[in-house]
Length: 82
Image 1 (cartoon, one colour):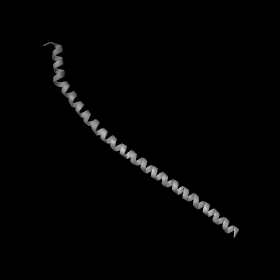
Image 2: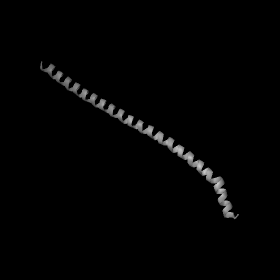
Image 3: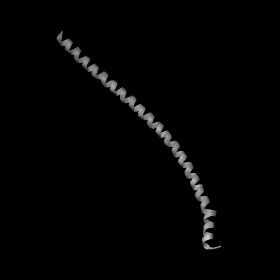
Image 4: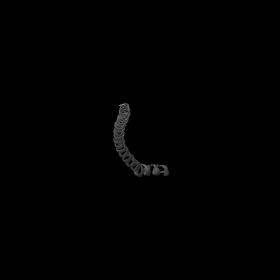
């Protein structure tokens, strides 16, 4: 056997199985990462919904506060007019 054939045989016998094992582990990690990405996407959507709800509540409070201020001004005018 020549040096090239021996080298090729060593690569096939020892290194190639290691590469296949590494590839299998990387594939498993990619699947786990995909699962984590999906959970993160779900959490992002939930955070966005909660943020929208909080902002809507803040706007309602601001509107309510503005109405209360206008009502207080009107009541003050009515008291000074009376």
